Image (cartoon, rainbow, N blue to C red; front, side, top):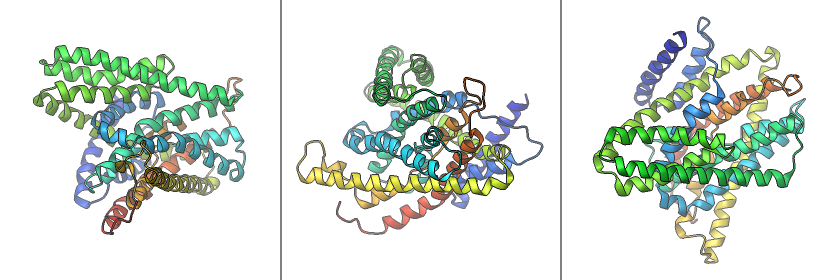
Length: 419
């Protein structure tokens, strides 16, 4: 009953602060995070443990499904080159860059531990970027790239995380085996998502006159698809994304307008509540992880987190602008794989760079680190990795979250240079 009351309290705070954010013109994710930090320091409040398994099951499937369902499939295909670059290659580049920094800067960080930290902070959270930039008038292209990146990069980051943790526990890393497993995870996720999409489409086609049953099936299927894929040891993230993309195309052809409106209204409420809870829970974790850190080392670890954020930001900027130039060269050579719509201008490139915030997946993967190795010894530097990850998430969400709206408004006033 106590936990139930706390959840209701957090939901009430979240709704009230979301309304307040509109009045004071402050991004509501930033306001909710600050509120979460403040609530976490209330002495009489029982500790709320964020279970990573619950996060992956409760938050990821509906958020990914909703993003995939609403994304423009045609725009997604046009920008698939950029999306795959950000969601796959950049994830591994970022994980490696942070690992190099951690290994040489942070005492006690062996290569396996450094790669654990790198993989935890390798994926961006477009939920935060979308929430913060809402109403700023971003182009449909920019929104599609950011959403498309978030649909795939979680899977890449989770694969990197799995290999890094295995290396800490003593499992030898073999590149060709890791590459093969990555392909199997991705392909398996696509297959599961495709099959479940066909099953759901079959059911929806025959039940489309019964609005309540149809919407109920659509709410339930992302969770079932995610669980099934994970049980089959393939990517649940990719499976849910493929499910969302498939049902989106199906629904546009089959669903009557009334059903579309009802479904959208229900999903909007669910996503609003989940997003709000995510940001409050992120803030709540800071007071808890502080208890596992020596007070005299806190600011040093904050500095390490800041360095990790800087490394990730610089690598993202370099990779995005390299992609901009690569697309331009390919288009100039009249490559059939690059259309004019896929080109990036400097405004879009800068906004995409600045939107590389970390979020709930980074937090959940850090908290999911095992407490002990197989031989019973404590997982080395676990508290330090979790603390650095939490602080890095907060730095990106608050720092970039506060400055992103200003950046968008500033550069939108300037003329666009040639791509």
